[in-house]
Image (cartoon, rainbow over all chains, first blue to last red; front, side, top):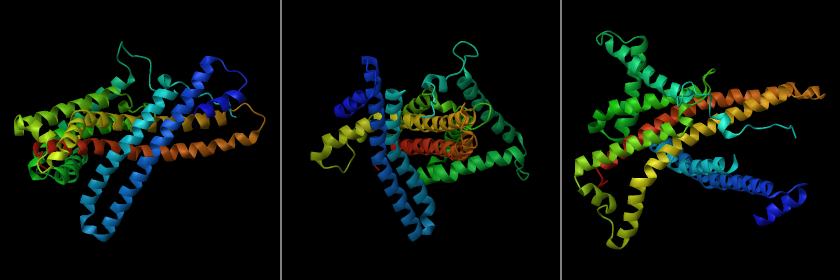
Length: 92
Length: 253
């Protein structure tokens, strides 16, 4: 992180303390959301994939599987959304 | 670059106050509550013996949806007495989400933390009260020490269960609704800004202006997507409420 900030600061024409702080915040916000999106992305993929597999194997249980799938998505998605909130708090 | 200046977040989610402390979000929330009440009052005053038409059709579809897709799936038959509460929760959240895509309003009331936070705390009070009413003071011991857990695991499981029940559930319930609606709102704003900036760009490159059709198509697509998200978030909030109430009633499961 430090290295990236120094690299950007070296290429940028002006670097007052406020600007360096803003650059840090912007980079931190980007990383916060990007990293927070990885895990839930994989997780939701697993949840939905397995749910479709279950529905294809047993179509009569589709209603129950769908409800449980939405529950699973909701729990998994919360982490990504907390990352999004951190992104807003840091970046804007 | 395009020289596109994105406005600060406070400009995007705040409007001029109509009265002191009463802005557009407040108007939307009050309107959502009143419209929900009016629809069900009108539907309730119709003759129940005749085939349902118009408003009553809509109301019956809503009740049917809550009963079959939410209550029966999560709480079973003895949860049917929770239908009125869950229905009002669902209708209120849905009507608060809907203005995010309605042309003049363009702001989901749930994209401000106040409404999701209040609803989540309300749900928190209700499911804890239900748990205490059903199990007495044993609710807390059952919550911290679920039966069937090995003794060695009890401190860890107890801590996790306690944190999850008391802090994480209302927090994630509120943040899920709030962040989803805010994210959707900001996506729409981003593409609207892009369209605007490209269309009114002061350049000699005339090819730029027709290109504004691309973010505009994305805007239309995302608006359609937000219709789905608004419904889905109301559904998820309601179904999680049902799950939490059921878990508080029968903590042994």
